[in-house]
Length: 543
Image 1: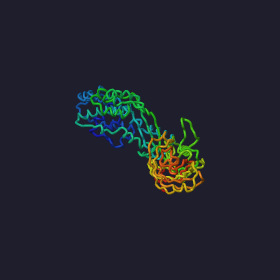
Image 2 (image 1 turned 120 degrees about the vertical axis):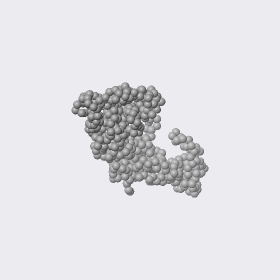
Image 3 (image 1 turned 60 degrees about the vertical axis):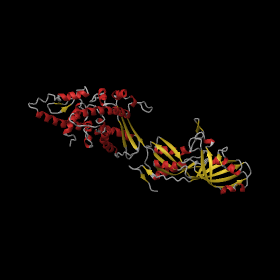
Image 4 (image 1 turned 45 degrees about the vertical axis):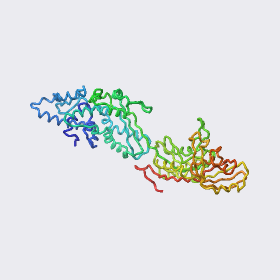
């Protein structure tokens, strides 16, 4: 059933005669159900012409002694004058030929003067197939997708001009047409193309999908159509570093909301002129949202930094914990890049033992995302077999929210350390026993000198929950500490020139230093829900 009614005929005839495509005519007539837009373009044009011919036949039959059909049907004189008050463009009036078909000067599949061809060839199956070929050649794994389209900004200008024209004509019939009554171009485009993309690729369109197909349209007349707005509303078009042109969609819309209708009509033709060219596809891009891999790592080397150690552009050590883990993930996930984060960090000469330190890696734009739990286990084993400096456990895919939970707990939990202490004075077993009895000792730590270049200067209060000592010889003992997360252990031992108070040296009245330090147990418990991307929705796995 054709979607337009008798009330729409005058507007439909007016728009078609000025070079507007059938789908844009539907939009201006408020057709908000999908089916009519999905018909092939040529069929739509044919049906629209039949609809308008019925109007003409009725008009001809009411006129006594009607003229031959070759004679053009003219609008009443006052209507022509009314249109001219908006624009000097008098072309495109509907004519009826002997065979009864209607035509217009701009309607023979010419480029639409409103959508610039977006709702014409760019909605047809042939174009959709070309886009899908590029998607399939991109190498991404996906089980659903979200379609993103970007249109030339002057489409808003042309739609505004057409709206002013239609609004004036409807006003003559005591009818109104608000901007919100027009179906948005992007909505109509998605109604038509979503089913075609889904059918061609065999996956559903899902607005929450992590896989995005982006189609960017451009048009050579953007500056020509929009430059007058910049002259009238210069404050709306401010250059931005990350924008190639000042004529962005947001800037154009802002200017259209500010400009007066009469000023607009003086500067831009209503109806808009037929364009010299159709839109072009500037780019078709595929991208997958980041996925996150988390786990715990143990570090067994005293010559391995957590992240690449580079000073003044010079690399100090050949590898790092970050690289030993991430290099494998990048290859398997076929990701473009990564971001490494962890719950705290250890110094290059500190080992991390016990249950390991929680870490997470964000894999940016991964091409492969479907993994079974067995494949993740095999990946973990591959990492562990590649180096004796680190080991990874509990490797899993996690949600973005889980990463936040990991960082939130850094200052709230406790850690257990083992330190080998040297003293300048000879000591006996009894000289260290008193440390075993100290509980929940509050210490004040001014930002250590060794990290002052990357941490703000501040005094932080930390808690030493408990200590346990084991005598080694007259200048050495081993100290086991349970402390609040975020405590600088080395500074607690040697005092950092008095910047940490109290410290082991001041408590024992000696000069103390730390020779070895190990993180024994990390008491930070991170709840990291696992998920897999092998279905349309994120599915929690049961362990």
